[in-house]
Length: 58
Image (tube, rainbow, N blue to C red; front, side, top):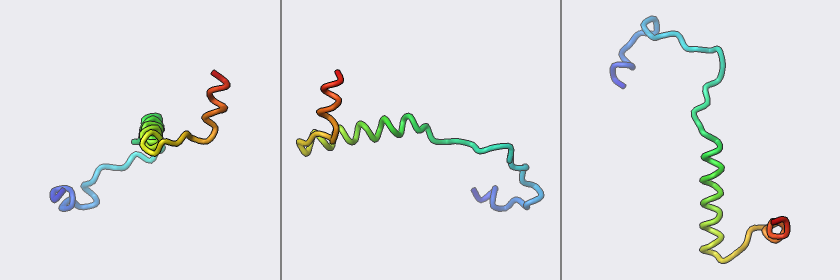
């Protein structure tokens, strides 16, 4: 980090402004959130809203 901070602006490579770069895998985030919700619901002994509707569909 110190080496980067010492560089002059003219020495820095150009940034690619062609588009956004996505670093987050949102599918993994959603899966993690679902796992946390299941864990919390199990610990609290509650069922999520709409769980009865899901059982009817299956």
